[in-house]
Length: 424
Image (cartoon, rainbow, N blue to C red; front, side, top):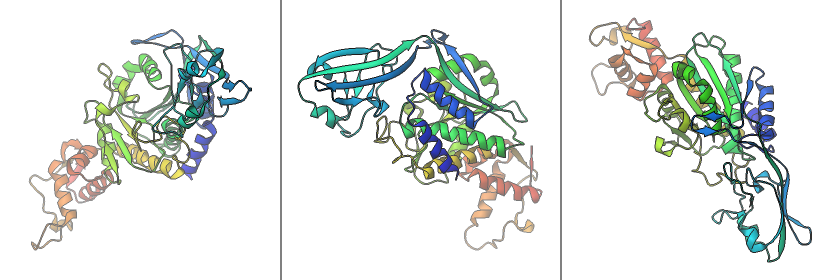
């Protein structure tokens, strides 16, 4: 059911033409605001300096098309918003095919796909089409029409703070700046919205405060950090960038720049119980982890994906649709992140009470009579006891022993009942 809900939201949002700043971003945030009524919307003015960057102008499109001499529209923005290069400036010109071709983009290795191309920080115009269609164009005259506008306004983002018992925070960040692509764009926001609802409704006695943000990628994260960095450096103990989480092919993670953070530990431990997991290097980064983990920021943020951006054949094209993104894939991604959040909420430091290795047998925790190998259950208890010195929390114990966080907690509960460990 949860996966079906997320898929329905994604399909509602799919037609919207999003980019860095403009009406598409606001329309998307308005939709998400209905799902998350406590979310607040913020704007950063065009031209505002945000660290080394400047907030760009807004961009909007009324229509865009290419038509031949007979008035037949051969490419039309109304058919698919990927047909227009994002941030194309206005144009109304007749030209021959050779001139037009200089403004066309296609993918020879994916001849049926419309590519996603942007021109955020350049003044140009262009159209995207399948390579098959591009090759089929005949010599002649064509009219290119782009009725767009670039104007001063603001960059918009959404923020939701769900208060916990502590001021320490978990960050969930996703982006809302790509047009009609299901995995690379919409899977992240709908998963994040579903997690926000679940945290608010289910974790009523939560330990942590949750900082949940919906930003345009790169410039939105930079703008958000420019306004909130000091507080985030003091409070964020773990964070996750959620993107490309809707397919069923594999699970992927990119650790933080320095590694070893709670976000790295918990995501790695939770994914260890799943099949087909790929752990990338921070050198394979590409989304807003670049900003959250950059020198001078250094937040403990990891990335969770299914098929990682740039690593699946439908990426940045019209093939990134609902043949790829499924309710099952979204539901499985929800389970991963819910497990991560649960593990963080239940993360505690434990200390062994008994000096030296305790006798498990007389407490009913070890039935081996000296014949054959030590039972796995007893061996796992020994491993956990060996590191339960008050300096290792549940996530550290899971990382050291290779035992999943849920099983570590179960074993610690048994040991606590037996009087062998205590929570610090």
